[in-house]
Length: 260
Length: 322
Image (cartoon, rainbow over the protein chains, first blue to last red):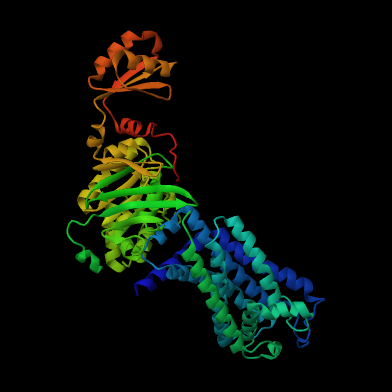
């Protein structure tokens, strides 16, 4: 009970900190919108997803991908607060409290996830505009999948954040990891019909399954446009396994961390 | 309440350090330190930067496991009992550990939740402590709007929130001006009186060590002396005469030759320890007026004790690690 309170208070603080930095709020939202309008609009005329029903345009196809982008990048870059807290001295106060490290990591991951899902959810009402038939059921399912993906990627970010001492280093490494993971998850182009090696990378990329689950959740009532993707349950199972793995690795990074 | 609080026998040291050693990559930052600190003491670890204070602090704060020897907090070994110790330990770091974007009260509540406190009782205690440190009117302000001295008070209030039995502070008055430093020591003394907490601080400021109950002088990873400030000062046999000279080595030799007194040369000055220093001063100045640029005489300070024991001034970097 006391540990849950500690976890909640750590997560709560991440959210308060975020909301008090207006530039971060504007930046993360604007990024998603601009990206969607430019890429979606630019490719709309020329690009036709292979194997998709003829009504599915690129703006619609890439919408879940942009949702995932906002989610992933917000979650990962929220974990940079570990690096900042180490610098400001705040982290040392947390480390000498009687809270076990796994609970500290869980609080940080939950905080980042809440922020990421919150930001991505702000884009969700735009879904019907591009022709995605979003109902209450599919919206809730989408939120659920986003929470699981958010936790996974927060875990991924925390593995790195607990090991690094500079925010510049964190940015460099996370961009290096996150861009290919997102790019090759079926967010920007369909998973089918890719040449051999790249097809394998997409199939081995754990985010591919999160992306599939996200698309399936969005088209919950009318799954025709996503019929070729992995079924919901296996996709969720792979994502959950990835989430546990990332969290475990983050806890071990936190345990190994020394104060500098 | 943790069971060991009752189980600990009467007279258990608040802090017991035995032959403590720590090395970083082959460099020995602590070279076998032993200390006993009784409950209720205000104890200062005095030494130059690099003397091993911060290493010792981190071990006591349960942030580092020593590579040799042992340290016990209320009888609990730091190497294995860190969670138990953290419940009874308040820590004030050299760098502030407050979140500057949160208000003072939010920082307090956050800290309380991490220590298992909650609800109205937590709010009451937080408000009470902010009041005790004279910052109650700033409770709703963000820490970033506070001056360094006020933020330091909030930091102290936070460290006492969970009623620790032992408070350890690492260079707590860094960044405070001299008058704020004296005020800070006054606060520490009354904290000890009113909250019954044992206080251990590291410092390189003499005035802080002078106002502590006992002092350990730490240099190059070793404790070179322990005792009350009076005891340590009494190790200097009398007064201290300092002669500034353009040729200190030569002057030192001549003083020793003429008066049979030991003279130490340090930073262009000659130091002489002797009873009845004022008489020595007069005689020396009369004997070698041409060799002396200026001369002073004083009762010994802890600085003199440090110089006597280490051959260096406190402000000069020590030989050990951080």
